[in-house]
Image 1 (cartoon, rainbow, N blue to C red):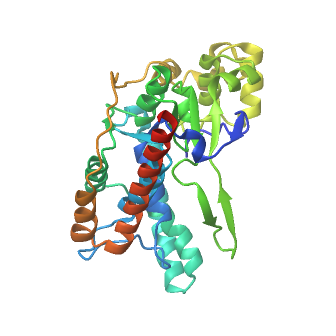
Image 2: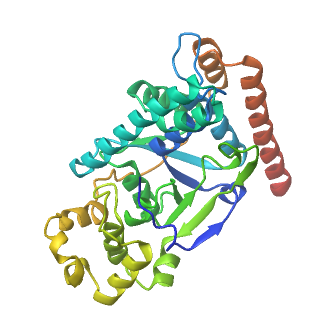
Image 3: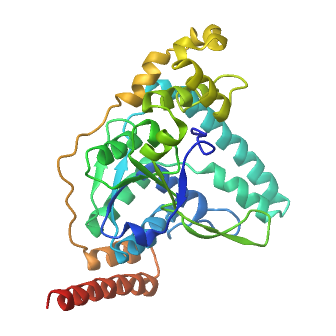
Length: 341
């Protein structure tokens, strides 16, 4: 699922500290899905409160944003609106994958294969409306702004980088580059140590940044041509792409012929695809043109009350994290006083 541009992009390792004082537009659904997938118990079930409501997404947002704010990062979350009609096939495909994963999860669990069960459980995550509302409530309490996009959140996040409102767009999906994100940062909301499935070992997941201008220069193509390369490989709007055309082949034939209309070997299939509309989905997407991004104050007591009283989080852990955040703010303030004093 998603566009596979990894082999073509100029990717540079980075760290979260390098984003201090910068605004980063985060693809909210992408981040929340990661939290729902990763934050689970030993049997693969997501975390939940005393009433049985899932809290994995809230846990991920809480601890990750404490970390962001402690480092001086300014996150803004962009939520998806209505998906484009062209995405229907991909949505149905994802639903089927979740159904298949659910069957495999239950089978592995019944056989006591817990590592295997957990792997399949991660593929069953479903983002429901109440989870989106939970997330927005917590962001409000943190004073972290969020934007409701009319359609794809990635498109509006990319637009924020184009207009200079944000330094980078954060998502796992390379589609952000087709939407024109000047800088895309991956592994932003899931960096850190991760256990490998079915293996008693961990890896360090590091953020990486992709500069669109550098990538286009290195490849020798325009953004419009990059969109055509994406269409050949397969996007969320044409998930199957073109048969036997991978990233390197797509790059080669687009550089050779210039655009989809002029590539001889794909003309039979091209007539079956509304490629002009597909192209415009990326080049002129539905977005919110945000004039200003405003950050609010943290309602510490509100965060504590919501997490501990309503969602049954450990009060000690919540207060410890918030105290760490307060100390980081105090340290920065003290440093500034010294600098200007």
